[in-house]
Length: 490
Image: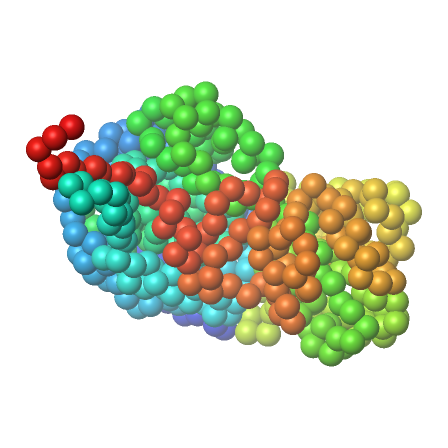
């Protein structure tokens, strides 16, 4: 089956160069057309125009990928390859990421809309760091020797699941791919990965780098498809032993249900949030403003840990709002490839419409649009940085994840008051400024601070399991207990 190639020469301020790579489904180390012969258009969110088309993967392609992964795991990967060798391959892949960092950042900016500078400094750099981190872990995944009786030996062994399905979102395409590949490959699993159909380009480019690094065919398979077809096939497939998903809470529930109804496969979920960002009277005001700005407007607000509910104590509320507003007005919305742009467009028309619906609901429910609240420009999916004030706790913009450049600034009186307000949401989240909440991650005097060796995740409906750090390795191994009788009696 033949496949097409995507070729484009960039002539922008921040990147000049040519990219060229296949756009088929990637199975058993080779690109091919999808089983149905259909394609998916990839849209440039800056303009709303088609960039290229990629092969659509369906359930038949997932099935073929699972068979390839199973064969690789059994014959050329898994327990047949020592951890030191897996680590070498991961380091080679990290080297290739580094060598092609400008190209990967340009692809992120092209189909996601994030700025080239942020993509290179954050997404690509973090991806390289994650791959190197798990390369270091690959030969250090040990069990325990357990004393039971002098005539017996007991020990544990951490073994890979086998074939794991991984479904990643569109907000950090390359970085989420690295977060998933790193621990799964370090522990010896084979992978069937589905990137978002909105942002497939960097993942497809990485497929060629995986081959170049020397991974055996079938160890990593990549299917670009829709959630209700390819994603559902991954969640339901009896040949997949574990599924890891990053995305919305609603879809996370569907993944868990499908996994339970099929073969009760192991599940980890990194889901949505409505994080409180809390600023007390004794805060460094300039620092608080700058971190709050980064907390809500970084990546255009398309971040599960965005500090979208900004609680400010009454003593500094007016001063904070004044400075925060001025800083927000100064953010440069512009061409993702321009050197001075901070914010690009939202990723898709679907996401644009969803965010605008939230903004309109805030207006209709009586909140004050303190800043923004409208489309930016007439072409593409751009939204002004938006600040709401005078909100009520039951408003949608306060309760629900917006996933866009929309924040609500809420006044509070004392710690008891803000604890009550901050925990008044279905999501028990990631980034309260003082660590006294049911939260998986607490950022103090900072926001959106991520490191490869520090676990990341949320409580309650924000997910199951942890990404990053040593903790993520637990997502990809079974623990086997072995008992050996050294004596001659029962």
